[in-house]
Length: 178
Image 1 (cartoon, one colour):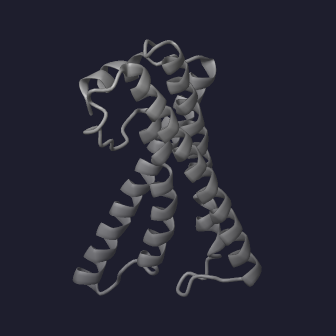
Image 2 (cartoon, one colour; image 1 turned 180 degrees about the horizontal axis):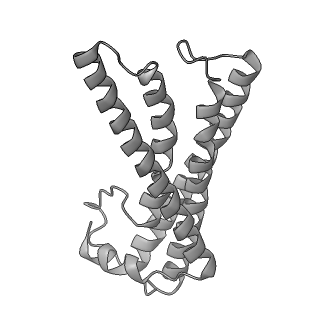
Image 3 (spheres, one colour; image 1 turned 30 degrees about the horizontal axis):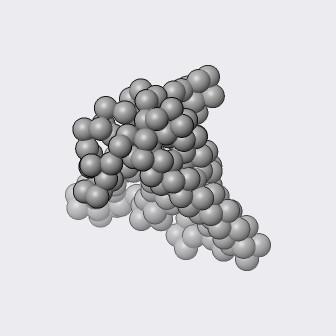
């Protein structure tokens, strides 16, 4: 990340809505982290049980896949709100802060569109799986639940992208000064 962007991002304007959105994004990321920790513990127990006692946790791979879907989707919004996205700023290092904020506003707008699209399609896919009555092979759990569990994370990503786009537009309108 270039010095001009790194210096500009912490000073972006953030009101009550932004602080609340940041808090919700953080809670989602923490929840995703806890789910990943639980998956690791369950995997260690299952592998240990398989090797030592020939008794793994039944459906461990199914649970891992289902839980990892939610956990993965829960991190994206926090990453975007914290400015942790990967940026290739080779071409923008010599641009003015105003232009950099304008480009970042456009990038965050695209993130918002992407989050909304993935949330919508995940919900539509989950609904179709629910109507089909698909269930997991070993645990007989409904397959639509973990797919639907991803939707809030992607919807939150859409909100985070829209909010960050607004922040960068405000900074660009002020000539690059936040």
